[in-house]
Amino acid sequence: MLIISSLTVMSKVLTNLHTNDTLWNDFLEGDRDAFAQLFNDYSNVMFAYGYKILGDREQVKDSIQDVFVKLYSNRRNISRDVNAKAYLFISLKNTLLNKIERLDYISTDHSVEVKFEMELIHNSEYDEENESSFTDGQRIELKEALKELTPRQREAIYLYYIQEIPLKDIPQLLGMSYQSTRNLLHRSILKLRSHITNGSGLCISAFLLQSLSK
Image (cartoon, rainbow, N blue to C red; front, side, top):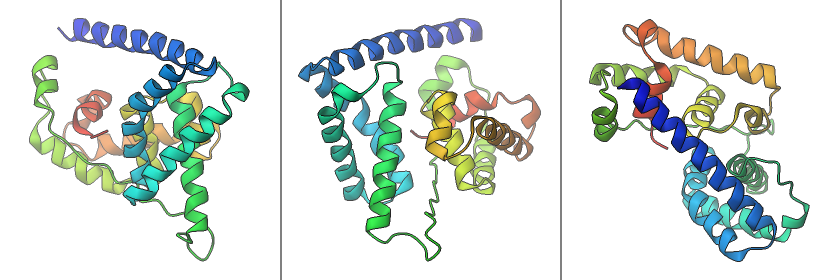
């Protein structure tokens, strides 16, 4: 059952990748419908990510609008060989960080402080499809364990496991090298496991996908 479920998920991921690549290419060729579809497909997840960086709904919405306006204006200079979601996330974060500086949301040492909190959900539909054995107690432990991580560790986990941003694109979002990002993710997962009962036998990636809100 687990193998079949995994193959189904992989099939959906590959299908989505192909669809997104086609949509991205159509947009770069000037297709307005493709541009509108990009906004429909990604604006909600961009908002969820942006709100974790800057907890101001209107500023995040305005920033998303800014990203798409600039995206359309600069489409002739954008590479086809990029992950659309990662590109939009990177653009949004840069826009937000610039806005944070302009709005004087930074501390006196000019470093941006992002709490990057993550909400837990109870996905009963996921439980039924995947025969989940994760307990409510483990979910509570996960919530407490997340508090022990640094904001950057939480962001790395969110980007990689929840939003499925390719690992090669995450360093640019975190302002780190590729190897440092890999090490950060590894340490974060080990830390989560250490705080969860029987964590050594827990499929932490499935647990995160099931328990964390996008």
